Amino acid sequence: MFNPFEEKPMLLGDAIMDWETVYPKPYSKEDVDPYTKTRIILMNGIEAEAAMFSHQFHRNCNNNELRRDLAMSRRIEQLQQKHINWLKPIGETPLETTIGYEHVAVDLTAWLAQNEPDPYVKQTLDFALLEDFDHLYRYSNLLDLDKNIPAQNLVKSYVEITPGRPTIAEHRHPNDTVRGYIDFKKADIRTMLNILIITAGEQQTMNFYNNIGNTYYNDLGRQLYLEIAMIEEEHVSQYGSLIDPNATWLENLLLHEYTECYLYYSFYQDELDPHVKSIWEMHLHQEIAHLHRAATLLAQYENKQWEQVIPGGTFPKLLKFQDTRDYVRKILAEQIELTADKEDLKNVNDLPENHTFFWYQDKVNHDINVVASHMVIDQRQKMKGEDYRSEVKPHPVEPLRNRISDNVTIARTKQKQFANV
Image (cartoon, rainbow, N blue to C red; front, side):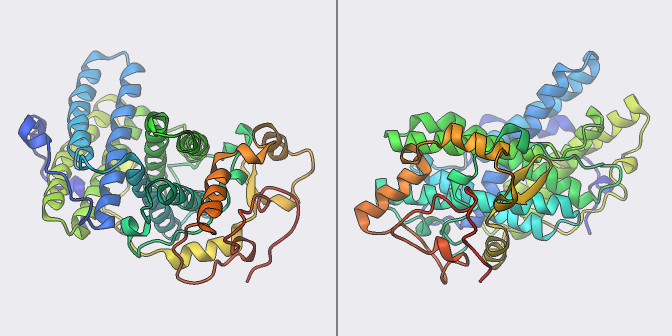
């Protein structure tokens, strides 16, 4: 298996791209494989996180020599982010891109959960999986409602479009978005990678909705983006809580660079588009140089070897976008009624009447008729007789099979209405 620490790094200066190189040929939105698109979206988020982390490190560092090192790597990360993000074609609308973002969230989270050795982290991934799955359903109904475009045309048969844990049930008190952190000195490398990857991915989605949501051309769409952007804030808080706060800035820098190497190598193995594959290869070599420099800085300023942070250095099982439909159905059937209770998860029916969940729900959802995620489904049902779905078989949760009435009580109110089927 590949070990990036054993590779000879290129010179950092050779990673600087000219304008012709950094501006790529965009993919065709009609012909692009959905997994090529999900890789592009995820790597854009990973590079955005790398730059944002570097800026925060820079602002909390009093050594200008170290800050110059950070500035050099950060400039290359910013070029990489543009190189990837500008693969998006001119004719792809923000809502079409949004469908891709939620497709990433579903298949990425499901794959990470299935390959996560830490039970607590797996539980966290499974919990949010059902919420991003529902977001895909809500945005798909908006796309059909406003543009008469079936989202299935965009995701093909790779993922189902059907309700998850209803978005209206996802609004929780801030106290209940804080999870316990993982000790990175004891954690499996897969756990550290999974946490950093999912945090970056969800952060990108939050920022995307924050920035483009208010540009949607009608009020309902603007309201839906606003609502789901707030759920993404919850997810970023939740996943970010898992990161070990005791890791030093330089240890975190090494982990960030290792994560990027891991993903570029993973995606290079599977990419079908020759042009995009060449970008993954180019960026992999650039990131290997960043990784080696981060290891040098760790030794120089903290007198630590990279093996103390990433024992062995060899990549674990490579990340692969693949069909996760059966797994999502399984988690739906088992965990639809879960909600958060501070660092834990509980069935909503087991919460006390005075729980923060119900207090917050009453604050934000006291009138369900103005909740955008509900209104989108309600309007589609009124216009076309039923909601928009793309299912391979009946929904695994019986109360969510009704296509003419949106369920706004499951996972939100204390009324047991579901047994595993």
